Structures are given as structure tokens and as C-alpha cells.
Amino acid sequence: MMIESARTRTVPSVTEVGCLVAGEWLTSGAQLARTGPWVREVVSSARQADPGDIRAACDYARTAARVVGRSSPAARAAVLERAAALAAARREDLARLLALELGKPLKDGLGEMDRVADTFLVAAAEARRIDGEVLPVAGWARGVGNTAFTYHAPVGVTLAITPFNAPANLLAHKLAASFAAGNTTIVKPPPQAPAVSTALVALLLDAGMPVEAVQVLHGGAAVGEQLCAAPEIAVISFTGSAGTGAAVARAAGAKRLVLELGGNAATIVCEDADIAHAARVCARTGYSNSGQSCISVQRVYVQRARYDAFVDAFTAQVRALTVGDPLDPATDVGSMVDDAAAERVVRWAAEARDAGATVTTGGRRDGATVLPTVVAAPPPGAAVVVEEVFGALVSVLPYDDFDEAIAACNESRYGLQAGLFTHDVRRIVTAWRELEVGGLVVGGSSNFRLDHVPFGGVKDSGFGRESPRFMIQDYTTVKTLLLRDISLWGSSPDDQKGRP
Image (cartoon, rainbow, N blue to C red; front, side):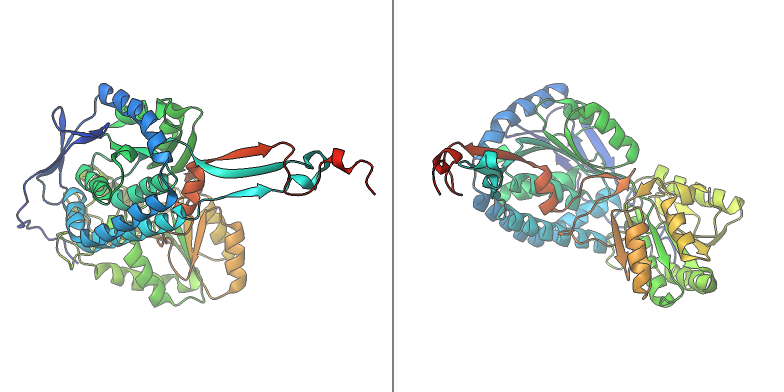
């Protein structure tokens, strides 16, 4: 395993993207350039939104919401199905943009685009399932003689704030679910991935999404804060750090929020596990996208009798990873998002080593690229154990008793997802019940997700659940219709008087 130092690929011309406001692409104005963390050159430039754009977008959204809300679920589903086909057709171009803007290996980018296509298809299916119900009002005396119905109505205007680590698929989740529910969406992409985010919106428009259904405003924290506070916004879906999520909540006030925040994901390896298999899975899922995933493997707790064997096998698997040019199809680990993030990971590894841990491999960087790092037996209070690393580093810690491992996992202020390697069904049920997480993966690490399965956390990992079905629930409101003196269930109380 080595970091490829030569960067010989030719960087294409800079991709320039605009803001989409009130049906028009705006390109003139202040620009923010994005320097690719691997190529070290400007790869994209985004026109930045100003306060006038924000007000225009919110004003337009109020009217646009009525247009989108009148469209049929079938029509919205058809758009999303066409978008899935386009995502599959354009997967290589978008994966290349991911590699250039973020240093994400091509194989990871292609995988992300496959998930985008799946997400669109799932959202299309869920659009066709939006329904309501006939309420059993006649089951109580005061309801006799009346009828009540509900249906799930669009909330109107939603705000999608997306992160840099999976900018295409997480935008697909938020935007597709919102559109499937019949809403218009204002998108604020991450400054680190403006081109790929805008390309995904353009893809949806090419698939037939009405221009009233989406707007795009590029910018930093100030733009996000103003959008969160806008009274036109009914629901905010945010993915990012816990600190920024708290800022979103403060700015939003009394709005519905779906917050998918940080993680400090743990995986438990029991004594009955296949150590070689567990080590291989943890190595592959601990360093994909340079560990920049909220469910990336960060802490691995291994039963003490198998600990040394796991550390040896895991270290060997990590050393076998190919580190280098993200545009090379053979690359497993590319760059982190920037030099500062890479330096933080290296610094935390050094701090753990100085406190008594062993760094079995890695622990250094070349620019924004961190050599995959394994920290064995760090002290419980080390940053690599307590904080969210969000980088190419995994800690391995021994445990003696299974309840001790559960308790150690739960000490984190985060609770997004966990992994468990065991064949003992009692331990599986115990972990499912006792672990303070939103999801448990058995037979795999914490870093596994199906886009049609509910995903979200507890504690500082946020609240709400992503996946189109569950997000549509957040993006709709239940509206009730009461029909007085019209009954599907039988006669009114007055009609019953005098009857046998």
C-alpha cells in the first residue's frame, strides 16, 4: 500500500454551474471555485446566491408548490423512473465529477450513482403508494351517522441541505422523496460538490421534472441560515455534522426537521465470528470514501481471545488496499475532502499513539490523502474513540464480556448504526434491544445501507428516518375530511330512536 505521488492526469476545463431561481439559471455574479483535493487544481466553480436570490426563490416556491401539488402521483412516478434510466446512462460522467471534486475513487462514485438510480426507482414506487384511509368513526357513539377520511397532502415547500460525502445519493433521497410527495424543493448543495449536485438536478429536469419542482442556491452557512429561517419552508431535511444540525434547528424555529447527523459507528466481533471474514469486511467498509461516511467503521470491539488474531488480519487487509488516483479504476482509497480534514486524522492518530496505543499501519498523509490508518488499543478517552473521525482511520479495542462491549458502544454521544459479527441468536437479539442506535447490521459492519430501508439515528445522530417511504411521511401532512350526517357505517343515533 502506498500513496501515489504523481498526479499526471489532465484536468478537464473547469465546470461552471449556476443557481436555478424561479425557473431561470443564473450564472453572472460572485463565484466560488472548488479545488480538487487530489488534482490540486480548480475543477468547478459555482455562482453564489445572494439575499435577493433567496427571497426570489422563496416567493416563487410559494406559487410553484400549488403547481406541483396538483400533479398526479402517476406523473411524478413516471418522471422519477425516467430519471433512474438517465442516472444509469450518465453514471460514468457523474462518477468522474465526484472523483474530481471530492477525490472519491471511481469505483465508489460508480456505486453511488447505481444507488441514485435505485433511489429514484424506489421513490417512484412510493409515489404510487401515497394514500389515505376511511376512519372507523362509527365505532364510538358520537361518530355514528358520520364519515371521515384522511389523505396525505404535500406540505408545499421543502428545503434540502446536502453534505459533501455522498452528494449525489443523499440529494436523490431528499429531492426524489419530496417530489414524489408533491412538493417543490429548494436545494442548497455542499460548497465542495457544486458541479455534481447541479448535474443531478439537471438530470431530473431532463427527465421531465417540472421546473416549478426545484430550485438550486449555492452558498455557505449564511445562505443556509436564511433559507432555514424563511417562513415559506415547511420541512427541512439536513444531513451533516451535529453542530451544524443544531444551528439548523435554531435557525428553523417551529418547522418540521429531518436531521441525519454525525456518527461514531461501532462494530462488535464476537469469539464465534469468522475472523478473516470480519477483518476483510471491516477493511473494505472502514476506508471506502476515505472513511467519510457517518456509518463508516470507526470502532471495532473484538473479544479478547480473538483480538490479536483480528488485529493482525485486519492490518494485513488494510495494507492491501490501493491508495492513489481516484480516477484509476483500481484505486480503493482516494483523497479526503481537503488538507485540513486529513491533517486532523493524522493528528488524532499521533495523539492516540502518544497515549499508549499502537498504530499498526498508516498514520501519515500526502496532501489530502491519508494512508489508511489502524489504531490498536487506544485509551477510552482518546479522540479516535470519543469523537467522529470521519476519515481513513479505524480503532480496534479488546473486550472481555459481551455486556461490556454493548456498554462501550453506548458510551458514545452518537447512535446511528452498528455492526455485529456473531452466530449467536441470543446475542443478536440482545444487541438489537440494548444498543442505542437506529440500526444494527448482523453479519456485517456498521457501514451497510439499503436505500429502501429506514435509516437514521438516536442521540446526537439526529432524528427522523431517510428512505423514500419514510421521508414521504415527513414531506406530507395528514388532512382530514368529515362528512356530517352522511354515513358509510349505518344510521345516525336519531334514526335509531324507536326502532327495535
